[in-house]
Image (cartoon, rainbow, N blue to C red):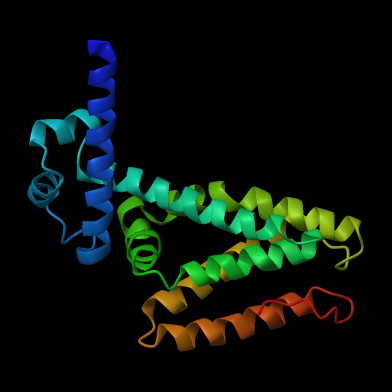
Length: 205
């Protein structure tokens, strides 16, 4: 292996170590409670290595957040892909999303700290970039196949997206998160049923 290749591998390993430790500490202590000194200590790298890969702690947090959002989006997409039609696919993806809200790392990093670190408007735009287009496609396909009533897709997608974000926050902030998950799922089930012209017995669990 060439020297350049070894350096590239070491650099990639250092970045992954910082992301791994950053995620663990952000999840445990929150963004505000995580010090860069602790990140570099646990990652066993120098402060210079941290600033080589990331501008500052916020930049590292954003990279951790991006990895988490991609992981959640991929999980929801996999759940949706296993379903026979777009309406059931959207419901399966919704269930997957709500289930991930029981993960303490998701609660702290994605739902609690991300809006505060990014600012509400930037957080909304970033969050939508992972999911909103998929929601619109599934709604359009559901309407085209007669699975739900015809209605304006863009505003409907935003309403659904906003409702699911609020549902996620209810779970994240609840003392009994399992109970909150069950209650939220029932509310979401009723919301989805309202989009159909008649009951189709395929609402969220």
